[in-house]
Amino acid sequence: MTTFDGFPREAFDFFKHLARHNNREWFLARKDVYERACREPMKELVAELGVDPESTRITRINRDLRFSKDKSPYRTYIAAGVRDIYLSLSADGLYVGAGIYQPEPAALGRFRDAIDDNKKGAALQKIVTSLKRKGYQVDTHERVASVPRGYAADHPRIELLRMKDIHAGKTLPPGTVSSRKLVPAIKRVMSDVKPLVKWLQAHVGARH
Image (cartoon, rainbow, N blue to C red; front, side):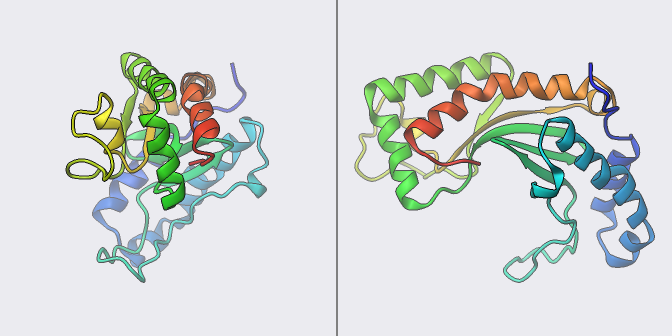
């Protein structure tokens, strides 16, 4: 077991109510709750996973509104990257996952070429199938509507080819996230998604 006791239940209530009252007045009156129940525990979790929180990018609560139609000033989650793993705490629990996000065109090309390759592509399909059987969500942030240019519509891995990126993970429920079971649960996810991480590193060279 771990010495980290998890996130306080207060964290989930904070994000739940922030979604309803996403304005400066409400947040400033409860900024201490955010710092105490969300940000500081995230730093402690990062340290518990063996990474210096001072060298880890933890998201700020303020959203960048310059290019967004949504003018809500605050994020309703807090996230951090620990090695190849992405952690995101929200009202729903703690999402733990890995993958690549919106790769540059060259990396996307390598991703699709590897999927198209009989050996490499079959290996990825096997990883995806295994993860889904274990209850993981394997998906993409965006996919092409039909068929990527240069590939056949009847390609055996057409659904993977349509993906513009890929991620696999699961959301750990508040009961786990608020207990000493959290770190062991995260480490199980890290172990389960490691084959996907290694496949991406070997054939795409991109990280989440």
